Length: 111
Image 1 (cartoon, helix red, strand yellow):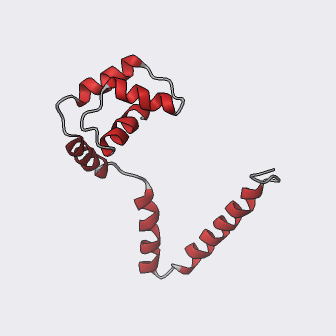
Image 2 (image 1 turned 135 degrees about the horizontal axis):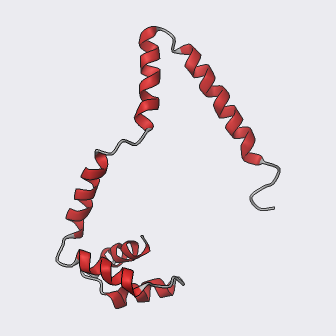
């Protein structure tokens, strides 16, 4: 991920086709070591391709992947149709209260 992020950052900065040297230089500035093999593989995969088209293609593929959030959204709507929507809401509130009380855990962020 770090290599593609650096590649995209360099492109956003105006470098239409970042080289391995450009990416290494950027990553060195922030103290990240580079793996030449992985970097060269990424650049060979991206060679001659439009990054915008690759992102659009990948977004289309991700849209078909189930994310697990749809099941939770479907449950309350089914309960509302059956007339039992009030009970699931109370359960959700209890769950949220438990999560909030666990957040402290006896220490603060800046202790």
